[in-house]
Amino acid sequence: MASEDLKSQVPVEENGTKEEEKNGNLEASVSKENGESSDVFSVIQEEEEGEEEEGETKEATKKKKKKNKSKRKKELAKQTDPPTIPVVDLFPSGEFPEGEIQQYKDDNLWRTTSEEKRALERLEHPMYNSVRQAAEVHRQVRKYMKSILKPGMLMTDLCETLENTVRKLISENGLQAGIAFPTGCSLNCVAAHWTPNTGDKTVLQYDDVMKLDFGTHIDGRIVDCAFTVAFNPMFDPLLEASREATNMGIKESGIDVRLCDVGAAIQEVMESYEVEINGKVFQVKSIRNLNGHSIGPYQIHAGKSVPIVKGGEQTKMEEGDFFAIETFASTGKGYIREDLECSHYMKDFDVGHIPLRLPRAKQLLATINKNFSTLAFCRRYLDRLGETKYLMALKNLCDSGVVQPLPPLCDVKGSYVSQSEHTILLRPTCKEVISRGDDF
Image (cartoon, rainbow, N blue to C red; front, side, top):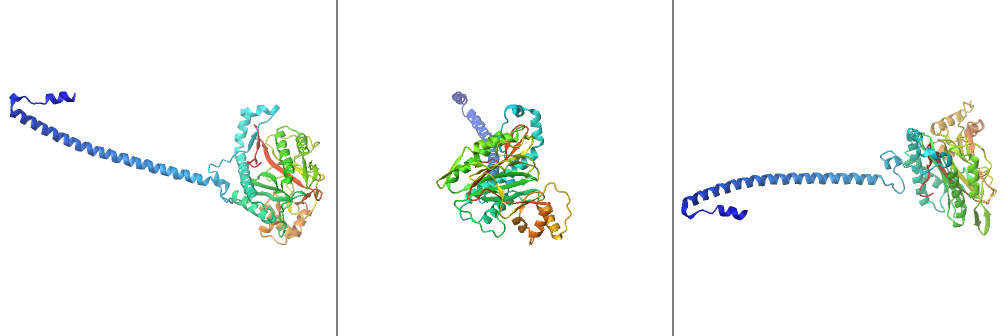
């Protein structure tokens, strides 16, 4: 095509110079037009290029902003070491992770797919979310504590470090969020309910078996979870016995399951273990007068007991129940008694109005009602609130039946006890092990 256009523009010799001039004029005018059009085109092109560049810069800035936002989100999603960021800030959506889900068995299989039961769960979601928040705090605190525990620590320092970490992560707020009960750090033959009082100089030793039992709560929804720490590997079978027995108890639990059946399954696993301590072999025993328990709002022991030996009560577990499934493995008699100085106290959940004579007792009760209500507390907590010279008033409250003393529970001297505990929720469609974590 291009070669044909060129031939048509070649002038005929006969027409002479006139036609050449005409053609010259035409070419000049065409070139002018072409020049003007090219100028316009170049301007348009420059404008388009400018717009494209602006668009590219806008896109680049948007990408940068997105990257910055994603960086911020990533920064928010990381907990510090030691933990200081409240768990609420780590989950901006306000939705906290579920615990371990276990399906019901046998006659309750239909619940898994029941639309009615799913609807019930949707109604209860805000409450589930609250208890999951408390469980997430528990997981993060125990992870940190496991990383810093070592022989030679003062027990008071250990407890205060743990409790202060809980207060930070749960964003402590009066009775709405905080510690559910004092940190139990019972050693060796002491099975439960021991925490150091102010001035106690007990030090954690290499050959100690320590039960670390602490609780968190949001709006009174309590997560009760415990594990055992032993630095000496000869105690590993003892720790494994209580851990596996607790897992068996969780597995056997469910709606309409008899509590005595759970106890029988726990005992069978527990007593299949032996432990060799300093060359002597001990048969591991379940402590027969210690139990797991149901949990209610602001009520750590809500009425039902989960035995850890066979032959317990015939009461059944029900839909919506919270249970602390806890087991105690002992090398002693497998029977505990109250001993040592009392540190744990709790206001009676069902107590009505009881007239008090001592003004100091009334004063102390007002402090207890305001700060703990029916949650358990210890003497260190009263000291922290600025209470002084309160022992007589506290004894008066105990004698009047307003407050229950909860002394340490001990097996025979020289024995060792391990503990493992998880909080479970019997949801309408499944069983949720709320406090389950990567550690146990």
